[in-house]
Figure 1 (cartoon, rainbow, N blue to C red):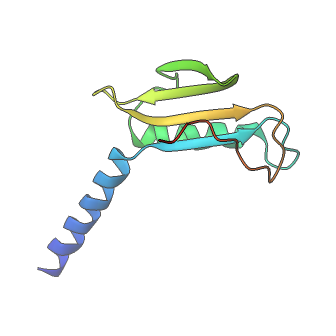
Figure 2 (cartoon, one colour; figure 1 turned 90 degrees about the horizontal axis):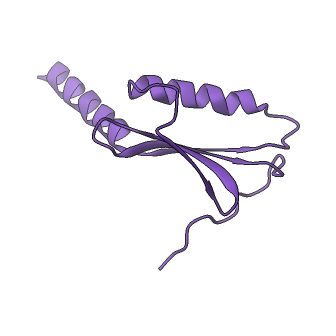
Length: 99
C-alpha cells in the first residue's frame, strides 16, 4: 500500500506541474547571468511539456518581448519575458493590471 501512495503522490505532483504556467524573466543587460540561461530553462520546460522550441506566439507587452508556448489544448504553459535594460537584481516591472 505504501508504494501505491508514493506513486499516487508523484502522479499528483506531475499533474500540478503540467497544469501550471511557468514564467521566465531575464534582463538583457544582466552582466552576471547570460541570456542563454533563460533559453536553457525554456528548453527544459518545453521538454517537460513535449513542446517544440518555437513559441506558439510572440508579442510585445508594454514594449517588452513576450514569448508564449501553448500545450495541445491551447493553454499557455510557458511564457518568457526579456527586459532589455534590466540588470542583475532589478525587480521586474508590473506587466498586468490588478482589479
